[in-house]
Length: 230
Image (cartoon, rainbow, N blue to C red; front, top):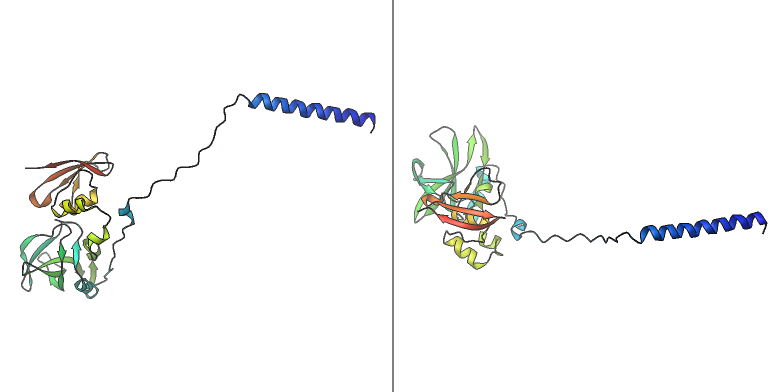
């Protein structure tokens, strides 16, 4: 090896040693940070996995499929029902359908309504008497059926079988207990009206409850306070 090559080699060795010393001195005082693996988020509320069956009726003929099995009211105390002769007596409102009330629809009929247009009506019996409620409209031959938004065609007790027995007992007694969520409260008391924007937490919801008002405060989606008006 030539003298020049030996000099170059020596310079490289010195440079590598110097770089190693610099790296050691520079890194030894730095705190070591470990990156944690992302936490696996908890499973979603089982309610989110429930997908109720829908019939997607396009007209009154399709809606007759509702007569093939019992149905249950989705939103209690929202939909009026009337005496049925026939015909439907729109002047004789009897009441509103209750929360998750079970019905056996006997027939689907169309009838002109007092305000104009034709209503598509579901006929059912209650306490041995025939009644009817609207599930859609006929607008000059174009029919719109809303039954999928109004009715369950599967037993809610089976759809939400993961709810504990004490929750179902409260629902059947039309009561809300602390710890129940808003869906469970609606099954017990029917449709509710949020106070304010409805997006706050805690969130306050007023339930008319067929003339027996109840105010429920929900925090993080669970009832924390229940006040019965009167």
